[in-house]
Length: 541
Image (tube, rainbow, N blue to C red; front, side):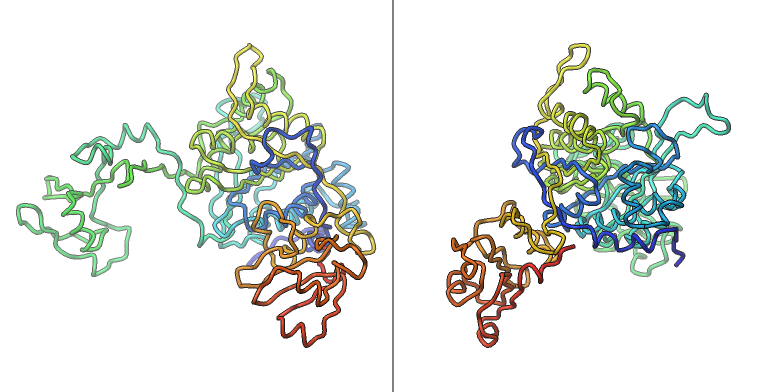
């Protein structure tokens, strides 16, 4: 399979593994409402922030949306689209070395994106997917990069967004009205069918007929039961259908449905027989609602129309007293559509955006929750401290609590709240030792994640040395920071016969992290204990 290569690729392919785990530091003054809602805004470089968030969210996120720099080469944006900011230049100097001084902008952009995408993939659930907005500057390179990171077999679609309904006076050649959004699944085999909300126009246009089931199933439309050229010929789909008057009909080619399914439809009055010039046609009824009363959704199209960049600008200006605080934000309805596609059947899902910008994704999550009484949660990451505090957090706070437009109109709040965090110090110092300031809960999440590859299943770590029992029956314990109320050097942080008796019991295999172990090898074997010494046996990256 063809692969994409660029200057600096080898230096960054495994860079995500060298990024240290950092602590999250709460900033209560910038939080909003109940922090227990599960929503989170993190200010910091998204590579370091993603690494810090892994012990909390690895394998837990259903939908990722990112709107990274498009790399247009233009300067002066609030986000420097040339990926030439001091933060990125410093990172390239540290990681790529001398090559970083000579990379052209496409190489720099790929160096920036590759480790971030690699980490983002680790956040996705088996049935999750990622959306990435881009334009023509990098879309072709991004396809190769996404194939490399997510697997070509997990490509779902390259959506085309018609972003503008006018303009073009400044264009020299062609009026460009579109951008793209790449969609890749974590595992396409596990991805659910994608549906949008029911289309009212489609209901009026297509669902024209009524029968005795109208009260529960709504109107219906008819669709041909006979397959023509779109299927391979199958003998089991060629059989006679007996009409109510006893006449039997044979297909010219074959039917769409099996004989058992057709007989069930006949018994349920779900087939329609229509006289035509050439004979009798057979159709089946497709109702607007299923047996439970749920309306049939609309299939998404690869071209997204009637949602424009101008809408995104209007969304943001409405919240900020008609001021332009950030250029070209994505429309809320566009991001709502992406999130809905993946969370329609799971309105409790987690949504992640690591290039949060103005916070459109946060507003889209709150808006969808308001519409269907869901409890989706968002995790937003924003690099720029000024944007994060004054735009991202302010926007989400205002749409959650309500706000007043420049013309005096009051807009009702959508509800919800969020924690606001900054990146704190790394868990480990330069020598690889655990920092003295690290709390038990911080180390517990890190230990469990690096031992199992999974985040702790509980929202908050309990004050117990037993962190959790994995799905395959292994108990993970941590003796640290006086969790057994004994802070002496040879006491509660050391695995002895006494401390072993104090641990919550588990009859199966155990992994126990501690500063030292005084148990014999025979005793450890008898108790099914795998001892791991802190800090040396803890992965630091």
